Length: 506
Image (cartoon, rainbow, N blue to C red):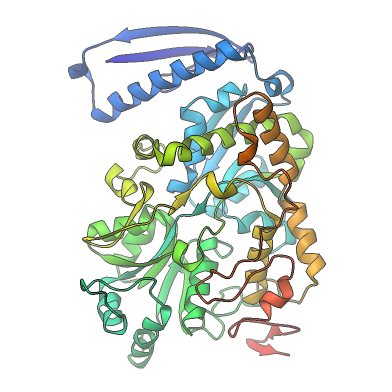
C-alpha cells in the first residue's frame, strides 16, 4: 500500500500538507512529493487505505494531465486562487467533493477549502458576507435572495449541480395507515408512484384526533418544500400559503410544513415531532435502514429529471473575478462528467469518498442504496431507479432559464411572491440569476482543450427546455408561459389573487 504526502507551496508561500491532497504541481506552484510505501496491515483503517488509493489515482491522473497541458489557460490569469466553498451534508454535493479529490480544482490553479455548513441559512449568509466565495445551494436560494424574499442579495449561478435526488418519507405509523389506500402489484408490493391521495384519509384521521399533521422540509425556498407541496396538492391536500405578514407557510394548511436540517430529519421523525419529510439523500435511506420510516415516493416520480441544486456565488464576485469563475465551472463540469461517465461506473468510488466524515459522513451502504442506480422504499423493496442521481447527462449542469422560472412559479403559487407578475418579469429574474453564458464559455474551453465533447453541451439552446407534461399531476409546464402554468393549478394562488390577513382575496 502506498501513501503519498505532498507539500504545496502556492503563490502566497504558505505550505499545505495533507495526505489526501496528492496533486501534480501546476506551473504556479513549487511542490515536493514524497512517497512512503507500507504493507496494508499497517493501515490505521479501511477508510484510510481507500483514501490512499484514491490519492494515488489522483496523483497519476494529474501527472498525465500535466504532461499534456503545462498550465490551464484560465490558471494564468486568475484574479483569486484561494477559495472556500460551503456545502450541506447531502450526496448531491458530490461535484464539489469530486472536483477536489480528483484534482480538478488544482488543475485550474485553484486552492479550494470545502467546509460543511450547519444549515442552509448559515450557508447563504456565508456567501453573502464573503466568508464563503461560493456554495452548493438550493436552487431557490439565489432566486429568493435576488428578489428579496428573506435575505436580499444578488446571487447568481453559472452551474446546475444535479437532477433528481430527493424523496418523501413517512413514519411507520403513517405508512401503516396509508397502505390500505394503495393498490398492490401481483407480488404484494405497492404500486408506484404513490399519490398523496393515499395520505388524505390519514391527515383527516389525525385532524379528528386533534393532532396537526406535521411534515418537515429543509428550507422555505428549497426544492424539497416545493416538491412536497406539489405532491400534496396533486393528491388534494393543501400545504398552506405564505403572506408578507405570515411567513410560516401554514395559512389554510391541511398539512403543516416546517424546517428541519437534512441530517436531523430521521431523528426528528423518530421522536414524533414530524410524521414525514422531504429531503435529499442519504436521509431517506437512513430512515429506511434504521427501520423508522418508509420512503413513499422519489422526486423522479414527481417530475422526472427535475432540476435540483445549483452552485451559487455573488454577482459581485462573478463580475470582479471572471477568470476564476470560469475556472470553477470548468472544474465542476469535469467532476460532473466523471460522476456519470461510462454508465455511472465511478459511482462506488464516489460513494466511498462521500462517506468520509468531511463530506456526507454517512455509511457507504446507506449512500450506495440510492446513488448506484437503485432505491429502497422500505426494507426489502429495492427497485431500479437508474436516474435517481444525475450529475451530467441530460444537460444536467446547464443552468436553464426554464428551471429558474419553475421555482419562481411555485413561489408565486404559494404566496412567497405576494403579488402577480408578468411573464417578462419571470424571464428577467431568471436571466439575472442563471448564467448559461458563463457555463458555455467554460464548456467551450474544455472542448477546445480536448477535455470534453461538444455534443454533450447545448450550445444552440435559448435557455429554455422544451415543454413537458411528465409531472405527477399531468399539468404541462412551459417556462415561456409562467402565468398560464400558475393559473392551471386547482390548488394555489392564481391570477390577481393575494393573501391578506390570512385569507385569499381576488
